[in-house]
Length: 333
Length: 270
Ligand SMILES: Cc1cc2nc3c(=O)[nH]c(=O)nc-3n(C[C@H](O)[C@H](O)[C@H](O)COP(=O)(O)OP(=O)(O)OC[C@H]3O[C@@H](n4cnc5c(N)ncnc54)[C@H](O)[C@@H]3O)c2cc1C
Image (cartoon, rainbow over all chains, first blue to last red; front, side, top):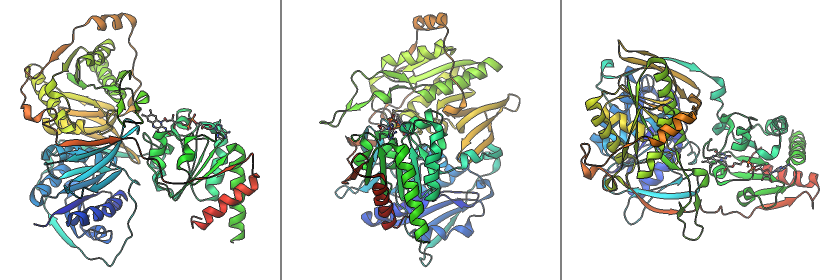
C-alpha cells in the first residue's frame, strides 16, 4: 500500500471550512516529501455530491462516509467513522483544523488510536533524515516554540488553526478517486443528541475571513476613537480588529481579538494602531502579507515585524491614511 | 449525584520568560496557579451542588505542591480531593495524562459511582484541549465540549441538557449520563472563598495517590507512555524584514500617508 497523508475535510450544513483547503495545500508538500498520496476524508449527510471539491484543492483520493447520523457534528459517530477508516488504510500523517469541531474530534480519534497529537501547529515539515513529521507550535502564550515528533505510533496527528497555512489555488480540472465507506452505527449507539442550534450573529462575525484588518490597541485611548479605525477599514473594504488590551477595556468584543487567545489572521493587509506588539499579539497576525504599524513609541516591538512603520499619534495618522486612500480610490475611478 | 472535577496546576503564563541565550524556559520564581478554565469547571459543578445537592471530588495530577489547587477548590466548596503524584507520571503527554486520570476515575467509581466529570476547555500552559475528550473516550462517557451552562438534569431518564459555545452560535444538546463536560470561561464567574472556609481548607488533608493506589499499566504512563516527544524548544524567530520607518516628527503627515497608500496600491491590495 502506498503511504498516505490525510486531511480531514470539515463541513457544516454542506458548507466547507476553508481550513480544509489550507491543510490540503500543506498536505501536498508533506506528501511530496514522503512520496505519499494525499487524501481527503469527508464525513456528513448528503455530502457525496460535494466529494469532488477536495480533489480540486489537491487531493488524490477522497474517502467519504455519507450517513444521516452524521447530519450535524457529534463526537462519537464522527470518531467512529474516522477510526475505522484509519485502521483500514493506515495513513502516515493525519491533519485537522484546530476549529471547535477539529479540537473535539482530534482528541477523541487520537485516544482511540493511542497515537500522538500536537495541537495548533504553526510549522509542519518532514525531517529529511528520519522522514518523521516535525510539528512546531507556540507554547506558554507564545513565549517559546516547541518542535514535537511522534516516533512510532501512527498516524502522526496534528491540528492547525485557520489561516496559519496559505490557501492553495482551486483547479476544477483535477481528477481524483472517490471512495465510499459505511458508518455502521445506529442512533441508539450514540449518547448525545442535538436539541437545537441557536444562531448568534455576534458570534458569526469572522475576523479570519477579512482581507484587510485595521486593528487598534490600548493606544487608541478610548472606545469612541475606534470610529476612526472603522472609517479607514470601510475605505479599504476591511474590518476592525483589536489587541487583548482593547478587548479587556470593553471597546470591542472578543470576536475582534487577534492573537494567542484571540484569532489567527492572515489578511492581505494588517494595519495596527496603538498596539505595542506583544508576542501574544504577533503570533496571531505575523502571517499577514503586508503589515503597517502605527505607534508613538519608536521602540515598540510591533515595528520589528512591520513592512512600514509610522511613528506618531495614531489619532492623527489614521484619518490622514483614510483621506489618502479615499483620494487614491477617487482618482482610479 | 457525584461530580468529579479535574484541576491542573499551571505556571502563570503571564510570568513565563525565555532565557534569550539558552532558549529554555525560566521557571524559577514563576508563580503557580490553578488553571483558570478548570476553576470555571469547578464553579459549574458548585452551582449544580447548590441547586440539586451533590458531592464534588477534585482530581489533580502533578507535583506534591499541586495540593494547593485542591485546597483552593475545597475552600470554595469541593468536598474532597485526590492528588495523583508519582515520578512514574512525570513527562506524560496528553495521551498518557488522559490514561492516568481515567484510571483514577475508575478507581473512584468503585466506591462512589460518578455522574459527571468536569474539566476546563484547555490548560493555559499547553493550550491543547485534548485531555477532556481523551478521558471521555477512555471511559466511554458522553462528551460535551465548550459548555456554557447546564439547563437541566433528568435523573429519571439519566440525561442532562447543556448549552455549547460554537462558531456562529450556541448548540443545545442532550447527553446521556455519565458525561464528561469541558467548560469555557464565558460560562460563569468563579466564586470567592469566605475567610473561615479558606482557613479550614488550608488545614484539610489532601489524599495523595501514587502509582500503587490504583490499577495502572505503567508503560502507558509518563514519558514511556507518551507517543509525542519534544525535539527542541527555542525562542520565536524574528521576522525577516527591514521595515521602512517614517516619523511624523520629521516627515509631513500627508507625505507619509501618500507613501503608504501608494505602497498598498502597488502591492495590488486595493
Ligand atoms: C497567555 C496570554 C495570552 C494573551 N493573548 C493575547 C491575544 O490574543 N491578543 C493580544 O493582543 N494580546 C494578548 N495578550 C496580552 C499581551 O501580552 C499584551 O498585553 C497586549 O497585546 C497589549 O495590548 P496593546 O498593545 O493594545 O496595549 P499596550 O501594550 O499597552 O500598548 C499600547 C501601545 O500604544 C502606543 N500608544 C499609546 N498612545 C498612542 C497614540 N496616541 N498613538 C499611537 N500609539 C500610541 C504605546 O506606545 C504602546 O506601544 C496575552 C497575554 C498572555 C499572558
